[in-house]
Amino acid sequence: MPSTAIERIGIDESGKGDYFGPLVIAAVFVDATTQGELALMQVRDSKKISDGRILEMAPDIKIICPHSVIAIGPQKYNELYAKIRNLNRLLAWGHAKALENLLERVSCARAISDQFGDERLILNALQEKGRKIVLEQRPKAEADLAVAAASIVARAEFLLRLKRLSDEIGTSLPKGASPAVELAGKMIVKKHGRERLGTVAKLHFKTTKAVLEEPTA
Image 1 (cartoon, helix red, strand yellow):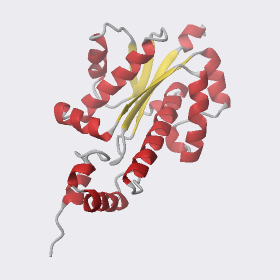
Image 2 (image 1 turned 90 degrees about the vertical axis):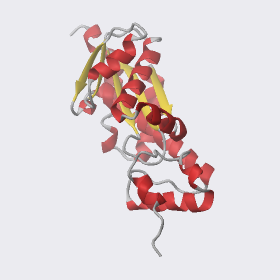
Image 3 (image 1 turned 90 degrees about the horizontal axis):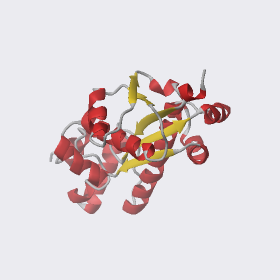
């Protein structure tokens, strides 16, 4: 297989299902050389790797692979969501932005991402800048090394930013959207008021309703 056939950009996101913290989208360029290095590092879907290991692996991936990371903090995320009112469109915008930034530094004809919606959303967002790229959307795209590498880079950025937000607000912000997340949300509202919630959380989640529910006497 000619090395150009191996060249591709993997894109993945982190934080989409987490009430607290940013939405992060990463794009990673992989060629024949880095493909071998990533395989040796045992790069795989970030969901199968512990947080500690993700934080160790991400800097190494970023050293060997050209990449770009788009992090949309909760405040910006809530503003964009209020305008766009559709998570798939918001994701497509982020994917296109990450791709565009990376295509300014590398030349590549193919990108792979997870199947999350209409690929035209991404392509339309890209074509505004005149970018032409073949985009493959696949279910379980993380099986591809380039997408797996992007998933690790995105997750590491998410974890670092979630920790920073936790430190800033003085409350540990749990991942996901569990009862522990609700409890943390209620503590933030109690300590800092409703306004502060929008600086750490994605407000369109159903969790917001539970957090803001007035306790019945």
